Length: 326
Image (cartoon, rainbow, N blue to C red):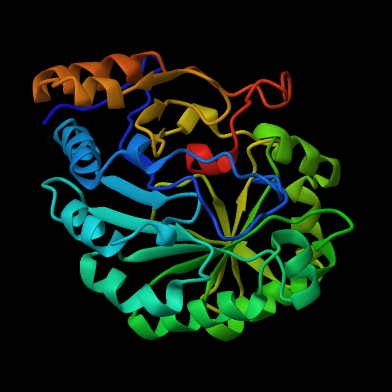
């Protein structure tokens, strides 16, 4: 089996796939509240095209696939796509990122389709604060989380973006919530991706500050979690709960980056913090062969930049997080 290795020696075995750029929430660090300039469905890759691209990645050694959005559960018939992708030879891990607002209706079907792990965005346990951040209803997300637990998803990772003066006072409550419901908790620093992301950086918090706050209340010991992501984990002593810290700004993890992103319109982005990309949709619809598709992917991986430039050039990335796939 071939392996995808970039020019810096990093092995790329993880593809994040945006199946839609649409979302029913408007998280302040992701998408402007009044944004409606979405791609039209004919510009989206269809399921056959998504499967073909990911089959090529799998033949080249990719083992991990994550379905993202926007909110992936607003894409019709998503469990059918998940079933097709989980059956691809070489794919060992199929996961989903979601805001969980539709998860109560789809959890069982997604689990049966081969998705084993979930990342769920939850930035507040206060209904008013949640509405302020996302424009949505907290109750729907909590119902989705409980449905996922009942469907047998393990692990379920809760992603929280702490923001100064907004929800940073809730981090201890979130730890207690995750201990109670046997959920993994991950804190993520805000990133200057698009206008919404740059606006949110005004409330940016270095996660070392959050860690110090938690260490005053909990005994944290070294922890580890399976998966292909960049989180650094600590375990809450006396529990099985891990807390992860994802620090793209304060302590970037570019040297070990193992992932690329496929947007809903078939654009392959090799770095979240750069504009390097290859448009695959025109090639697919022009009849590119499987061998040529593989060669295109290999060439794209070789062009993967060494690191992002969020700190040096925060204005560089113009696209929204929801378009890229998080």
